[in-house]
Amino acid sequence: MSKSGSDGYRPSKQARSVRSEQLLLEAGEALFAENGYQSTKVTDIIERSGCSTGTFYHRFTDKEGLARLMIERFIDEADHVIQSLDLNRDIHGDLPQMLAYLAGGLHDSMTERLGVYRASQRLNTLSSDRSADTGVLVAPLEAHVMTYLDQYRDQITAADPDEALRHALQLIIMVTLQTRLGAGRLFPRDKAGLTQMLVQASLGLLQQGDRS
Image 1 (spheres, one colour):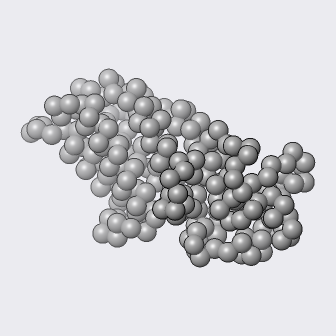
Image 2 (spheres, helix red, strand yellow):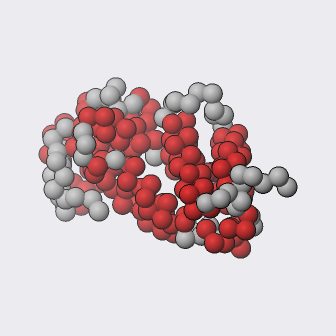
Image 3 (tube, helix red, strand yellow):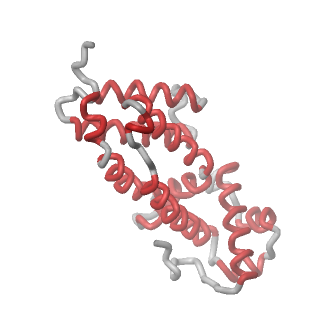
């Protein structure tokens, strides 16, 4: 849950102030995605948002305060999205299709909210405060995915299906994130190619020893 007393942030319930805050957050996220967190200046955020310098500093102490609020709110939103993910076999048909759906969804989310992930990556190199770490979403996503394990167990030949599914999920998350952040340059850059590669790699973990 977002903290109303987050460092560097002063909340307000006035409609006009709330709207200005949203404009600043949207501008910051867009600029973090385009230019990176480090290269984005407060003056850039103010100019993009159309708000005044006074409005920014009335809401936030600095760029980090804005980024932390942005990340905390994203974590709240993403947690709700995770809980609503429907991975039922009746819908996806088989294990490869479910993995493709999962990998594709993560790709879309990380692409759409790239500014959040870039800010989180940078802040976490500077602080051990987990409130600004999108990595806290891995645990609830893992727990949610694991509730569907029994529906796909007959298609998993690894000696330890639970461990194999966790490893496959971790692989999908890590590769997708690093690719979206600009690393992993040897991986496919397009969604379809990356998704296909991740499904194949995941199946390699989940179907070890399968010679059929």
